[in-house]
Amino acid sequence: MNIFSRLFKIGQSEAHSAVNQLEDPIKLTEQGLRDLRQDLEKSLHALAEVKALAIRARNEAEAFRAKALDYENKAVLLLQRAHKGDLPAAEADRLASEALLKKTENEAHAARATADQEKFAASAALLDQNVQQLKQTISQWDNELKTLKARVTVSTATKTINQQLAQIDSSGTVALLERMKEKIATEEALAESYGEIAQESRSVDQEIDKALQASAGGQAAADLQALKEKLGLNSPPQ
Figure (spheres, rainbow, N blue to C red):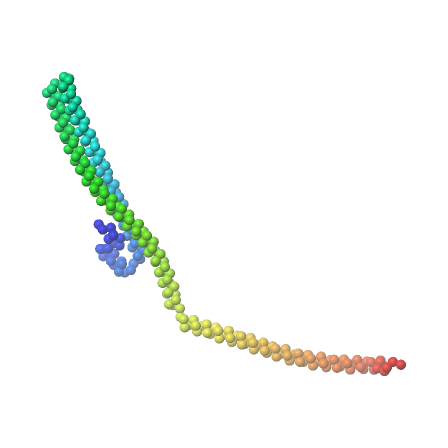
């Protein structure tokens, strides 16, 4: 299976429909990464099993080679004992022949186990390549996901701002500002008008008070002169 095809379910009608309908790319990417991680887990499990088979085949080959060597040593010992007279020559030959047959049999098993080990090792190497490719792909798309999230955040904020700007009634706002400006000018003129009226009122009051003060001062001077005359203070001293 092509690991890249699993990312967005390409080849499946649901994925094509989702992409065409512009579904959330973040969710699609996260789902693709989950699928890749599941593939990685399965590949790691398969790799472990194949490596275990290779190890088992290697151990079996070593065991069979050890048995073959042991049977060869036994055949040598049988012939040596027959040569020393410890065993009849015919019996020693028969048993040595049997030992050599066992040796050949175990060598064949060892060769088969070695071939299995090589086959399993080759399969493990291919699986390991797939695992490394999956890890690299997952790492790449993890970084892509971070970038996508950042781009979505920026685009969402930009879209919101642009939508808000698009909904602003520029002419209405300007008209409102002009009305506020006119209202303020009217209020300022009205305040100035009231100030002039108050100033005019204060001027009239001041004139009245001044006239009254002048009149009061004249009367006081007349009263003072009358009092002096009454007291005879107007005539010069003798």
